[in-house]
Image (tube, rainbow, N blue to C red; front, side, top):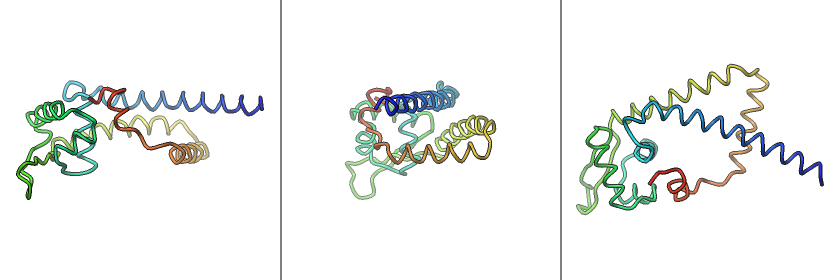
Length: 159
């Protein structure tokens, strides 16, 4: 039993260390745009970039933001030309939000920055090590629960 505990502790410590490294890359990539958008605004851009045009009510639900907060954040994103609002085609009470080309380019910039940082790390590994890392990340991701959007918004300031 003690051997399992020691091995388990080593595994957890290794994963914690890796998560700090990955978080560091994410933070560095976001620091490049921190004067343009907040983390909460970036989250809205990511949602729209991944899911396409959404009703404001969906933005509110996806981010766990209060409607007034979501509206305020989107107002700022509209003024910066990163998203646009449109009338819903069938329900005039609804407002649809869409990412603009400028917003998509901002997301692409962050992704490219992250990719470059990750490529720098990967370049230090052998082909065998890269395969091991890929397999490890895949196994870990499959064993992990889906992220709790409400918790992420509360704990990471996405509100």
